Each structure stands twice: as structure tokens, then as C-alpha cells.
Image (spheres, rainbow over the protein chains, first blue to last red):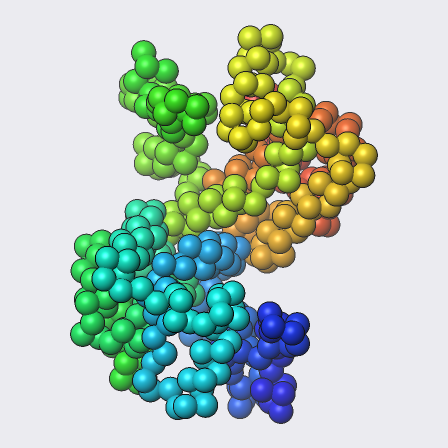
Length: 202
Length: 202
């Protein structure tokens, strides 16, 4: 990250040192490196004005406020995913994940966050409530926040739901539940994003 | 409120009974009564499509999320205004205000919220920080959230700043501070809203 010139986005809660995070991009055609998804979106919109806008004109403050509100409420979904380290991680990454996510969530070990049985059902109900509150105000259409097209905040929502798919598995009870909620809004969102916007099999 | 058919918007925290709040409107031409500012805005946009939109198409979820985030952060401004009951209130309203705002804020009496001297300066600094975070993401223009025109959320922000003007007074240290912050953004906002959108002298 340092060698391409990407800046740290936060500090490590453990020791206050700069923290470098992904997503980050290095744009070959301009030599510019950017970390932080919102800054990347802003950069791409500005540098490539002829491609679909992630942050359409007039929605900058809205995209930011929506993202902040969404992240402030999304803990019930993290609880369903964070303690189960994805099997796809190599051992060194898995160790880093276990150590640093525990620090982020202020717990001695991710294991104390793990829920099962009745507690898991409760957590799923809370997650449904969180997404339901957003679904209720998304009155401009049946899929996207802005109604007619996906913008930055749809990728914010989808990335969290994608963590359920990757960590719990696409055939898991959790992911199938998410896909059934709110008239299938999240299912449509995931299907379209994966078919039209993703270059990897998820 | 009952006689015009306006619905309660919340419940009284004291006893769980329905609470009727203003703003509320009764539309003579349709016979419809609506309470709750967001529902009023939605109703007006739908019923009078040829007037400027408060909630432009595609921004419904954004307006709602922005309002919720704003209200979740605005306590430092309430602390500057709530304990000082406006002199313009008649005695019965003033008594109601003192009693029910204390219940809303979970304090035995509004007097315990009152700040002065150094504590007031601290509170002003916090209020500046809150508005500063919003100012920072309002990159689409130097006045309005959406850049080119006021929408629902600008009235949300302005209504809170207006409470400072009315309660502390337009010549108060507090209001003059607000008007000086962030390149004069809030001052421009208040001036234009009062000159172009208000029918009463504020």
C-alpha cells in the first residue's frame, strides 16, 4: 500500500498506528492510488465522467449519510458473519482476521460473539428488522435506493449481504433467509449486481 | 387534531398514550389532514406535482436516512436551546413545554440541562463539530444538501438552527456563532429560506 502511495484510512484501535485498508485501487492510466470505497467512487466518477456515476450529482451528502446510518445499524449482521472466519482465507490471513476483528469489536476473542440455536434466530430477526427499516423508506423502486439504477449505497448494502453469502455459504439458512426478505429486494439486488457488475464468481 | 383527522405521530414516553404533534396540515382542497413533516412533504409533492419537489424522485430513502442521522447527532444543539423556554410562549404552553421536554430528555427538570460559561463554550464547540461533519460531505454546493436547490433535509437542518435563533435570540452569541461557521453556509441557508420561503418575520 505504501509503495503505490495509498493513504491509511483509519488508525489501529490497538495502538493508534496508521491502518491501511482494502478496497484500494491503483489507476494505471493516471498513476493515482486511492483507498476507502467512498473516495474510490468519487475518484472514478471524476476521472471517468462518461461511465455510470456511483455518486450522481446532488447526492454526495446523501450517499455519505446513508452509508454512515447503515453502518451504525448493521451490527446484527456482523454478529452473524464475523465469528465464522471464511474457509477461503489462508492461515496467516485467518489469524490476522481473528486477532484484529476481535480488537475492532472490543471482545477478547471472536468466539464470544458466536451465536447459535435460539440466539441465532433472534439475531436473524434483528438483522431482518434493520434491513426492513431501510426497505420501508426505499420507496422509489423495488430494488435500488435511488429507484432506477444502482449507486454507491447499493454497493454498501450489497457488500454486507455478500459477507453473509461468503461466510455462511450461499446455501446456508442465513443467506436463504436474507434472500427471502422484503419482497425479494435483496435477492434482486444481489442477482443483478453479480450478473451485471461482478467479474468473479461469488 | 382529532377533529381534522390528523393521526398521532408517536406515543407519549410518560404513559404510552398516542401523541399528536405539529407540524400538521389540513388541506382545504382535498379534505386531507397530515401530521409529521416527512409525510407532509410526501403528500404535498404527490398532490401538487407542479410545485418544487421537497423529495425529488430518487431521493426518498436518502432524505429519510439523512434526517435520521441528523437527528441522532443534534443533541448538542438541543442542549443549547431546550432549557430556555422561549418568552413568546404563553404560560400554559410554557408549562407544557417544561414538563414534556423534560420527560422526552429523561431529566427531572430542564434546569439540569442548562449550561453556561465554560460548559456552554464546550457545547457550542460540539454543535460546531456536528454541523461541520455535515458541511464536509455537502460537496455539491455551498448552501443546499443537493447543491442547486433546497429539499426536505435543508428544512430539517434549518428548523434546528431556527430554534437557536428563536430561543437564544437573533442577536445572541450562540446564533451569531452559528451564522459564522463553515464559510457562512448556515447563514446563507437561513437568509434564503427566510427571504424566499417564509411568510412570517422570524
